[in-house]
Length: 472
Image 1 (tube, helix red, strand yellow):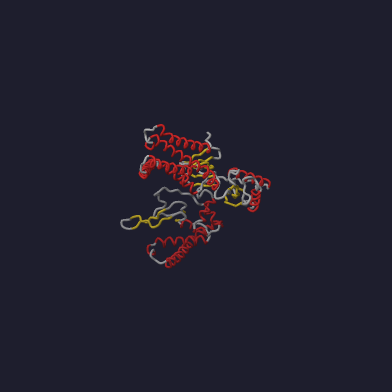
Image 2: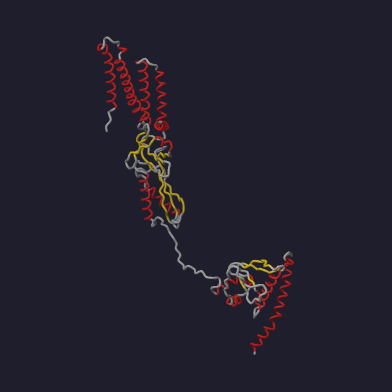
């Protein structure tokens, strides 16, 4: 759609003004019986004259002020909203002259009524006025001007980034032309509420970044040298700034390797967009890396294969039984050849909850080691007799030590068993429960010596008999 030339509309305004004045001069001859000042046709012609004069003034301001002086000072196109605001003021003055001079009404009352009506209208369409004054503020601030490339980041989880070149800042909206060649119309309130990035200000140059990952085994200084050479080789390419040096930074590390940032400066959309500039830099960097025998890093995963271990009980193998005996303080001091026959004699015994192992007064013939779970030690005492728990044994504890005192064993086994029996007796003896540690230790030593002597006397004849039987 073509618009009329400014000079053509100006000529039309002048013609309209001349026609209205000629009509006023011919009015007395057309109606000689009615005074010219009171004729409704004369008032209408004066009103048309005022409107034509206002239009002519606006055209003169547009040609001489906006298109010449202001546009030259701004270095671009003057926003339409400024022109519209000035036009409204000119027409408002012309209407005030018509109301006061032609119709003889109070101009102050007219302006008051106009203001009151404006308030009512503003409340009804406050969103429109919000856009209007926001657009006016944007023009007055000068942060965004026609021709600038801007990026808007609207709020909200589903919002997308808006990018384009400012084509017009109107009463209610701002027009952006996107890189795809589409026209994007944005309400002016978004310019005040959203985060706006202006790529064209404060200077024409803008810094961009291009990330690339390389293996951590490549020396950092070598990578920087190669990538910096790639960025510098683009000097002189249209759109790249030549008075600002590019840079290469090691940004972060990950399982892929080291991430490097290639920073460079461009003139956005003159003629390259940031996306096109990053494409050029990355393509040149890959070319330089290929010549150097390098390539971008890829994700690396180390996989180790092994059989899933079979879950076995603590006594499933001879090694497990020996390890169980080694973890018990009573047998920890024995040599391997001493623990091995004991481990071979171990047998598993599974107990149900509340099941008894041995009863008080039974003659024991085995040593019990608790591998898993816990056992309560109950003693029957009092009148009437009642079972009283005096101890709780857990994993690694043992009982029934006297069972190992039959047979041929090294002297150190007998000594350890004697001490274990003495400590167990002293611990169960109520007379020693309140004694000090030194007194208990002395009692254990005394009782241990007695047990050792008794065991020696008890089993000495059996050992001699066994020796006689073997010799015979």
